[in-house]
Amino acid sequence: MDGTGQRIMEIKASLPEGVTLVAVSKFHPAEAIMEAYATGHRIFGESRANELVSKANELPDDIEWHFIGHLQTNKVRAVMPYVACIHSIDSERLLRLVNTEAARIGRTVNILLQVHVAREETKFGFTPEEFDGLMASGILNELPAVKVRGVMGMASNVDDDDRIAADFRAIKNMYDRLKETITLDDGTVCDTLSMGMSHDFRLAIECGSNMVRIGTTIFGEREY
Image (cartoon, rainbow, N blue to C red; front, side, top):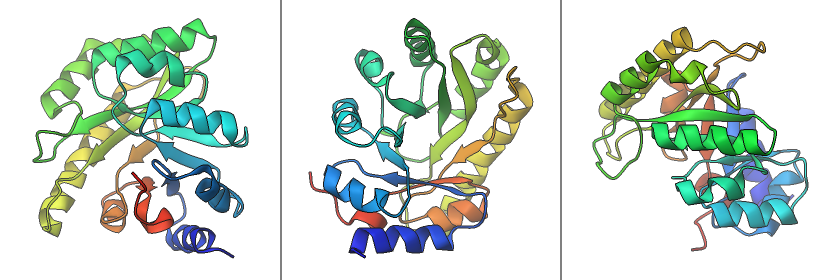
């Protein structure tokens, strides 16, 4: 078996039961995705709309595409036919637009609310205060074409495990409060906490993550 296939199988074997792996394939060619696909893996993450659409049209139909990067409003219509879950809903405007575009083509789409607790101002997402306001507004139960499945967040990019763990616990707290707010009328549950990447996913799992986004450890350094 090739290196990519071997690495993804090793990572999946090491994950606790109930933790889902999103193999982050952004900037990697279709051939690399197919090497991972050959092991039976089906969930892949992309962060650029054009790249996701191109790969979705080239690769097998049973791949479950997750959009994990910042989604520009002018790209929502392009990704909507292909995406299974959008991890990066970071504004009410984007949330409403995703609902509109999903309804337009007659489907519902799973989404995660991206929250921002990290030190870096460059990261996107709802601050804790904005998140509380969004929950209080009632909008999360009013959009028929989106299913709010949970929360996505990133820890501060530091070499301090205590700080990283504190960020993850803050994200977990927001997820727990969201679960108390959301009612999904079709039996679907708010059940996804997406946090943890190649460098910190084990700590994220310790702090409650049940979905990790791993790219470099599987595919190697990206080909920009």
